[in-house]
Amino acid sequence: MFSIKNHIPNALTCGNLLCGIFGLNIVLPTPDFINQPDKLILPSILIGVALVCDWLDGFIARLVNAQSPIGKELDSLADMVTFGVLPAFIMLKLIEGSCTTGTCTVGLFGFYKPYIAFALAVFSALRLAKFNVDTRQSHSFIGVPTPANGMVVASLPLILVYHPEYRDYVLNYNVLIIYSIVMSYLLVAELPLFALKFKNFDWKSNQVKYIFLILSLALILVFKFVAIPLIIFIYILISIADNLMGEKK
Image (tube, rainbow, N blue to C red):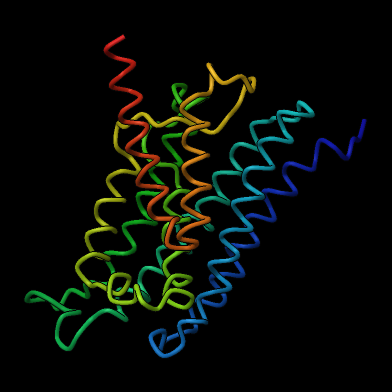
């Protein structure tokens, strides 16, 4: 029997995918990003919309018991585009914009260093493939989730436009290169991280999650878009601390 509720999660996942496609359609034809930083605002917003779709598709699938193998695969394919490929191209534009004369190429073969940003796409694919076959990740994560990287990269153009006082930090060539390399590693690292999934809402069972959410809200109220990279950094630190405390117990 046809039931529309069973198709809502996949429809939301397709919404996630469309956000990534529309975002790429805007980013790819924008060669002169430095003089047009506002051109990357909409792709960044689309990543935010996709995050909402990504959370809702899983939540509704569990709510109406509409989870399926095809839904899981479709979710990974959508995440690859929106949280893997699109952030990689945004990062490419940022690194190109931060290049000074003669610093974009290196070595005998003239390797174009901004292409290091594409490692984010490659390792996002590896991370999503591992997630689909790793039974340890049903209620937590091993490695940084691809949406977390997407959030950080999406926040950078927003910081440039709405918090121009941080421009020198955002368009720091070395920082962007190092971020691309370190985050690529963290996507596939054997690093246990908690997931914001609630079996119940009592404080004792979800203490770490509630502390993280309260800290995140406070940071957003104070720092606005600048808070997003800080939140992901704190997410990783809290997860590591929680794992260490768990081992001691």
